[in-house]
Amino acid sequence: MIVIFEREEDNDMAVLQNEDGSTCDVRRDSLPVNAKPGDSLEILPEGTYRVLEEETKHRKERVQKLLDELWEK
Image 1 (cartoon, rainbow, N blue to C red):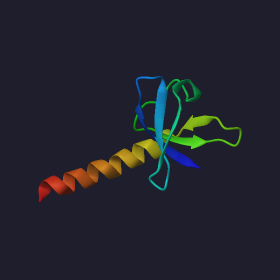
Image 2: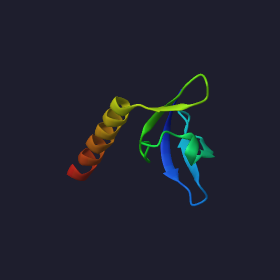
Image 3: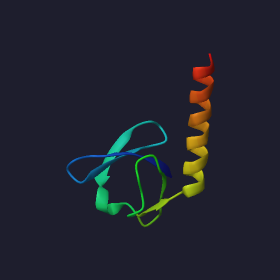
Image 4: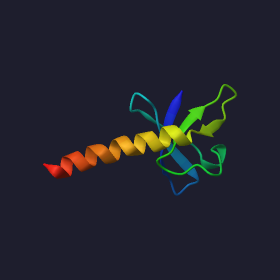
């Protein structure tokens, strides 16, 4: 399953967005140290997370393209 690291909270928690748009809170220290808001994360079978760098890059490119198209109009 792939989730998006949406944001960090002040209380050492992180908000993750699921594929269906719902969100859940997890402890920030349960995520990889190199994870940052906006990253795509894979939830591994043992319950740990892995940053998906290529997926993150492609998702950001898609979003940027949509924004560029919006501002062209």
